[in-house]
Length: 182
Image (cartoon, rainbow, N blue to C red; front, top):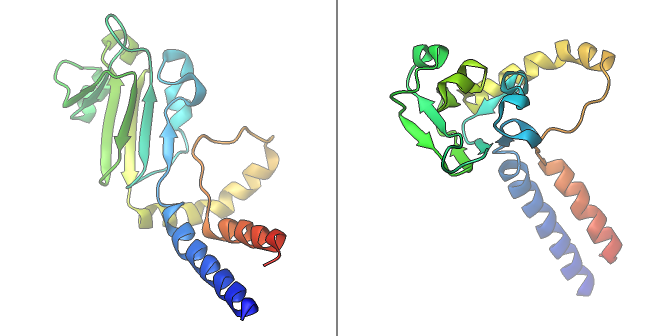
């Protein structure tokens, strides 16, 4: 009877980890804009954004100095406002110092420094948000071409966008169960 209960418990744990770990853990990515430096001119936001994929359900995190005489972030309505750094009529202003922005639908969103001079110096970010299916297709088509390029490059630091998928969680759960003697 004890062996049946252990096997049943193991089966239930494996199924739960596989079902919930595979979809929920990889469903959303938290992008910290500018990585460790945050939202500032020295971060080179354009380089940070290059090659990143933003998908419906992801989050952007902006970290910057806030308060009186400090920077604010504005969300602009159009590409024209973004390119010319016309920050006079934003559709939204962020000024908390740490802002979490949910990417809820496909399309392009434009973020910029509320200071026009900082915006003109590159403190701005266009974010193209893709559906999950579009991102998956794009990712699979890039895998072959980027493999050769990746082999020629030196290793890079890990991204601040982390994903843990179902098979990884399944292996971890199996190791824990094995150590417990189940």
